[in-house]
Amino acid sequence: MENSSGQGAASIIPAEIDKWNWGAFLLNWIWGIGNKTFIALLMFVPFVNFIMMFVLGAKGSSWAWRNKKWESVEHFKAVQRKWAKWALIVYAVFIVLFVGLFFAIASSFKGSEAYKMAVAKLEANQEALQLLGQPVTTGFPMGNIEVSGPTGSAKLSFSANGPRGKGTLYMDAAKELGQWKINEIFLEEEGTGRRIDLNQDSLVATTEPTTADAGSSFAGTWDTDWGSLALRQDGTNVVGEYSGQFTGTIEGTVVDGSLKYTWKQTNGEQGSGVFRLADDGNSIRGTWGTKDSADGGEWTGRRVSAE
Image (cartoon, rainbow, N blue to C red; front, side, top):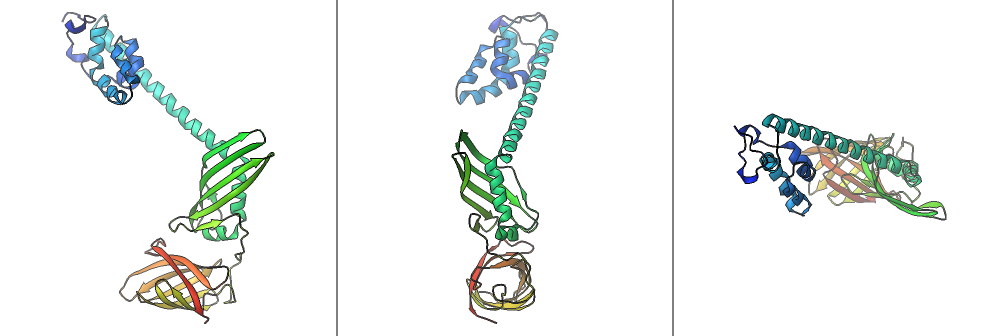
């Protein structure tokens, strides 16, 4: 077949080159300039550019054959292979740079004074430690930090996970006269949405209770949002019954001030959950769930009588 490349509409497209062109698809307008296919500049037109990528991939080879003189079909195919190769190299470099930039920013956030102060607040709050368990691991912070000389601001969020629970920490801090100060900082429990104010001093006991003393005992009759709940506590072991909307039994153990329990109803349904005493010792707040989770919903109540 006669080489008719570069003759515009009069060019006859060889069947062996009328295929998908990866160089045109990935490098689009750059490929277009190099192959005298200036319709590729439509990549700069909003909305049209997305469609144009696929048009160039499908029609790029035939357009390049018509718009530019080539020595032979083999020469054309060799050049297009180089375009595809360089396209892959460019995209690979871009991905590496993007991932590297992400980790560089995340690492700089983790090294910031604002982030370190937030982690210190978390690790000093006993209520948060009882919720998560120890050791606590924190994830990459997201948000923004702006510093201009002695002033600045930081709005960050990051995950905080432990052997007993998971949550997300949110903080808002400001830098004035060269000193950082945390304005607000909360730990939000995963599943329940309950928030712990880490700016408030925690008064929760850090040791595991061994007797049913005041402030650590779950014993008594409780008026809850699911009906009446009667609990009996012997050391760290708790048993009881509930009635109202549903009827069933509870068995559990007090660990670090929290009652971790399993429940079983007369209809055969069962699951697990956790209760925590309020600071006044006369209110409970917790969650229940089915099977091995405790994220079915909230269960709260107030003590109406002691054991």
